[in-house]
Every structure is written in structure tokens, then in C-alpha cells.
Image (cartoon, rainbow, N blue to C red; front, side, top):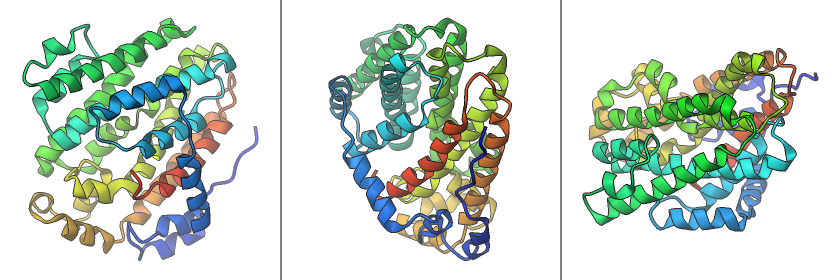
Length: 349
């Protein structure tokens, strides 16, 4: 198995110590030219949806708040990171199922981060656990009831599609477990946004990366991977965990500005700033958004996240050497490219 080279230039680290989260330092470290980021952004904008996916996205757009670029970005990213072990005849079907799971997760995430409605979130979570109808769970008003019905419909479709995969019975309980971790991340985000004094790096790193759904989607891939050796599941889970952390870091360093404007402080950028004493929890609640952004831009936090990304990449590369039933080298390469895809999306979603 060929060992790929890290895409991050270690020699650039020292210069990053004096750079901010928002001044383009990540691009410099990755050696990604601005024209490459523009090219990637145009590739994302050119992504086309199948008629099947389009109907679900249009249904989401009747209730959800995110723009079309996000779904184009997700479809490109999901295609890149789908495990090479997925059967060729099932690959497109699996990618579409994972896109539906992202629609589901985004609807849940917006309740936690934007609505910050605990009752609504808990009722929505119940939709992924029971066969209850949206009418039973959302009796309060038409808007929330309709929102809940969209969540219930999408989740029902995700699960019915998962059941058709050849190894679903081997992974059903694990798939449910992984989805619960995603939902628990939503709970944690809501708690943090309502009580920023709880912010700390340990709990962020334990809970919040699950909102990326990367481990859930890898388990879903395994449901459609007949060649995968179940004896390698433990080490594969470690690979997926490191990949999820890499994906989370790319998300954090490119969305934190929008999250300040949304008053969503569940990102590790904010817990890290508090841990370093750059910000106090009370300031997240009291300071205007532009002041918080200025403080973070002047803080020079970026090196921490770049180094962490590198560490997870190195561990992922080490772990995949112990998996024999499937070549996961392309999976590593996909996450090396995914962070570039994150960078090209800054300010677009």
C-alpha cells in the first residue's frame, strides 16, 4: 500500500503563529492557490442533482433555511468520501441515502443552533426513535408541525433505504447507535448555546464532531460493502473517528464567522478561545457579533487547529495499514481533498 504525503507543509507552522483565523493562513499552509479555491467553488456550483434528490431538496427548501450551494457541496463531498468497498451497483444509491441523512441532520441542527427550542428538538429526536406521526409530536402550531413532518418523512426514507443493503442486519444496531451520537451532538449544541459558561474543549471534542455524521455515513457504507471483514470493524472505527475529526476541523475553520452572526457558539473555535483566555463565556452572550469576530481574528488561534488536523491525518494513515479487506488509502486522500473543499466554501454557506 502506497503511503501518501501530507498535504500540510510543516515548515509553514511558525509563520502561522502570528496569523489569525480569518486572514487566509490555512490556504497558505495547504499551499492552495486562490485560483484553485475558485476552481473548486465553481465545480461545486456546477454539481447537478438526480431527479430523486432534487425532489427531496425542494421539499426541504419549503421548511429549511440553507441555500442550494450547501447541498451541491455536500453531494460532491459525499461522493469523494464514500468508502471504496461499497458495491459499484449500490454506490449511487448509497450516496443518495447519505444525502438524505444530511438533510435530516441539518434540519435537526437548525433547531439546536438557530431555533434553540428544546421542546421542539426533543420531539424531533423522537421521530428517529419511534413510528409516531408528525401530528402527534408537533401539536403546537402549523410551522413546527410541518417542520416535524419533513423530518419524519426524510428519516423514514433513510431507514427504509438502509434496510435494502446486503449487510444491514450486521450493522443495524451500530447504525442506530451512530445516529444517536449525532442527535446527542445536537442536544449538546443547544445546551451550550443557552448556557455558554459550559463551554470547554474536552466536551466539545467528545460530542460535537458527531454532528458531521461522518462515522454514521461510514457505517452506512459498510452496510453496502460485502467484501468488508467484520473482524476489522474495531480498527475501521478508529479510522472513521480520525476522519470525522478532520472533517470537523475543516468545518470549524471555515464557518465560525457565520456562526458568530447566528449566535451559535457550539464550535470548537469558541471553546478553544475560552480555554486560552481569549474570550470569557459571558462575552459570547454580551458582546456584539462584530466585536467577537475582531477578537478572534486578532488572536492567532489557527495553528492549534492546523496541528490537530495533521495529527489526526497521521493517525488515520497509520491505522489504515492494519485493514486488509479494503484499501482505505483513497479514503485518506478524500479527506486530504475535503479540507480544500471546506476552504473554497468560506462565505458561501
